[in-house]
Image (tube, rainbow, N blue to C red; front, top):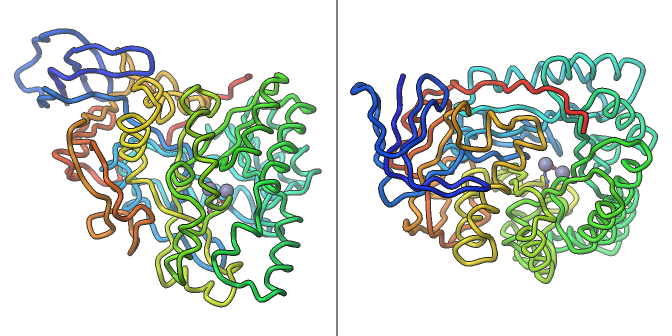
Length: 459
Ligand code: URP
Ligand code: ZN
Ligand code: ZN
């Protein structure tokens, strides 16, 4: 298998040049001008196009039993949607709940992906309780190449951990060279505010945000950082949504806490008025942390452009209209989640680069390179250089389109970004040297994705 991508403009996190790229087998072997290669090589002409490293989504849910139902995608549907949108690797949250066994959960999540995903993948291993056998289980999972944990400070009695368990998780993570990722909201306060609002007859989706206000997320973020500071572990805040939480995280960074920040595409582009829409239209826009007051978006974009926010993920989590309606009588029963795996790159390019404050290098860094570095995938993934996996996105920067559920590949009957314009899109997408998307269509091999095993990093 040999592949030549010729005449494109290559963009990485720190360079920009016109060149041909040649891959033999799964690896990039040559980069240069006017490469002469074997006549049997498959050729993609990238004239007038940008060539990016394959994009990495550091936060997705594919298989997810949650809130009395299951997220809608499978690895077949989710990975094809990801690839069409330019994402060649995703990191799925492996989420057994508090009543389940961590090791069994890990094997279950692995079995759902293996032979089913068309793109490469790895997991963040959720630690949802810390009991006698937890350390043994986690050591085994880390030895299998999963070098990031996930904890939830929210979702009390289901995924959520107590402070004692957060401390134990971080202590082990520090020993093993594992980074701890965290959903940062104060579970106790969320529970109390939910009860109060429901008792007042406030049951619609517009009350979801007031039940998890910005201060509740800022508290969770600050507490997570304080625990990192005092255990010496490295951490990563997932889906940070608002300015007060950002300030808490930045204050920790400035104290020297080893902390990285992820925000997700819905929080940059959608605001709480979407969840205030009537009935099920509002429910479609319920996620946690919630969509916020629009004023937060400027702070997020500025922090992203200047690198204080490290990565942009999706928190892809599709529930369809019927599932959202489970929360018709009480917003606390609306399955939380907004799908975005297919649209993240195009939305970030359109509203970040074309119409916003990002330069192309920061775009590549935030949507690919930085996640590869933080999660132990670099330089195999996250850049274009000789020796890297041949994961590439040939991108048409002049394509115009409008997002609509009618054309999406995500297994869902709506799209939270319906009607938004996009100013670019991938034409060809390769994974380890194989063309998986051509002219915007999936033409590849289903189930070809590999579980990416990672080494511990002693940050
Ligand atoms: O609303 C969300 N975010 N759903 C997925 C679960 C989580 O908290 O990441
Ligand atoms: Zn979360
Ligand atoms: Zn999530």
